[in-house]
Image (cartoon, rainbow, N blue to C red; front, side):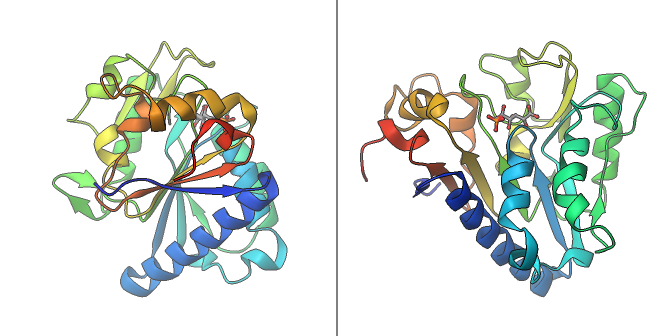
Length: 244
Ligand code: 6PG
């Protein structure tokens, strides 16, 4: 795979603007090629950054009615729970685009994590597939200070899952413990895969990812699609990276 591209913005707002521009470009390309834009988003700080990057007239050129939003990972909680990634997206991005026709593929409530994962995988049927793996037009990922991405945590057996597109975890080190997540083969099949990582709390792990030992790769470092991957960082997150 190509070497990851690192793009550093001065602050969170600059990162949001770059993210918005990347999403607009990917959406336009997907809709012109295939008539639909399938976007997978993560939780944490990402929905807010994304909403800011597409806020107001910045998002006016977005093909909202041809956009389908999925979750790169989701917490197995009610959709009204503050821990729900759906709720995060609903309160930010969707609240501002009510009536735009954007569709969202949500977790089915009330299922245990393994059943919720199988159910979510069912909802991906009908997507473009490559080697049996669903292909998203764009996947937006965050990274935790331990190097996890989506709900793929360091040293966890979920990292080795290749026979499922969506898998579950019941012992997530980051609360809440029950989650579903896209698996590594799916992350690596995305047409546009982007990490959005801000804040000084991520500087050390970014140093490890880009300059550390390659013997044991952290989950985020294992996301290396053939289409390339871009990291959008703010200056505090990039503080321990040497210039290219
Ligand atoms: C989740 C996430 C998770 C997140 C990272 C980074 O739902 O918990 O998808 O992988 O993206 O933990 O979170 P922050 O952006 O809040 O640091």
